[in-house]
Length: 239
Image 1 (cartoon, helix red, strand yellow):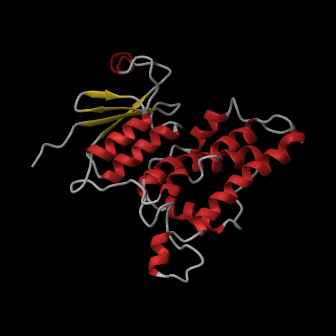
Image 2 (cartoon, one colour):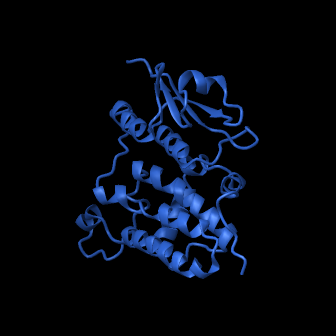
């Protein structure tokens, strides 16, 4: 049997340097390694102290970065591709999506959320909220629409009952989207008193299912970390 690779993932540390900080890219890779069932070391990097490890291993880089058998990788998308190719069956599960649509579902949510949350003008709030909400509605529609595999099993299905974006297993698409949705949920509640509408049943179900999974729940930063990260960019609206 081949020797297991030596893997170390460096992620952004929390403000108190004790736990993981707010970084959806770090969480994405943390989830992937956990879902792969790989043995790896997680190292938090305190950005305020700019430790020697950063200067030595990845000068000029921000976490996340990966040390794989002594080789450093710094680009999140390329790390994801590398892990999917290298940690492959039969020893490790495949995490890629069956359906291309799953990989792009929700890809406009974070951009519209940022515009909504960084806006200081009450006059623009309704328009930006509608624009952001429309991305959630679109995402909800994707989650409520049966996938081809579901229709094969039940040609008369009108509503999807799948757990996640691409089926009943977490995939790379979920590792990309869920950390962002968690930030959206926490920040919108604090700064806009906005919660994801319960009428968006597909999206609500998706998040409920995700929070039950250790690979997601235990890789999330504390809510306080997210709020600290957004403190300087999110704007309270003075009504």
